[in-house]
Amino acid sequence: MKAITLLAFGVAVASPASAATIPGLFNTGTDANNVALVGGNGVVDPHYSIFSSTSPGFAGHQAVTFQCCYVANDANSRWVSLSADGSPGSNVTFYRLSFSLAGLDPTTAVITGSGGTDNAGRIFLNGVDTGINIDGFGSLVPFMLNSGFVAGTNTLDFRVSDFGPPTAFRVDDLAGTANAAGAVPEPATWAMLLAGFGAIAGAARVRRTKALAV
Ligand SMILES: [Ca+2]
Ligand SMILES: [Ca+2]
Image (cartoon, rainbow, N blue to C red; front, side, top):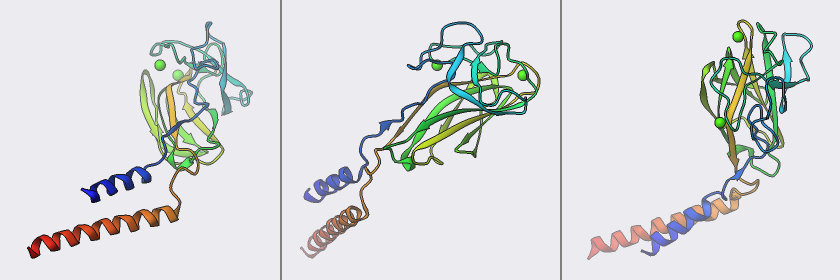
């Protein structure tokens, strides 16, 4: 009974501190409160910028709202594009969202969401291809990122490949958590915990031995 109590205590200590919400994870086409922007096509998205595009003249601009014939916008996200009419298409464009993990442990970060693209989409984290596709606009594709995060500023890029105008993309229900930096036990703490587990195991062996001897 005592060993079980000690074991439970050890697990409680070893468990990381409760995960904190990663700030700055906005869906496409939303305001500062992650609520869908009001207005028709062409409303400026304050969070998603056009990092690069094979169509000249768009890099450095913000994405703007554009809905064509895609799965419906909802209360917390809207489709966005290069322009108010989704032109020009037939290009490859990287849309970027930057966020900060300041004060958080990047090795514990997890981000989930769903996305769609007209026509094909791929997610890059900090310039690295995650291998995750979010293709198509008839429905949104769920995704999860749990590695590749760095301390401080991180960049989430959505590469949208268009096969003919218009083009657009959408991120919905983007959310993430990470532990506070330094919340993970230090090596010395782990050593103490392991020593504790060893003592518990030893005590159990002694009890078994005694039981056999009786
Ligand atoms: Ca939504
Ligand atoms: Ca298209």
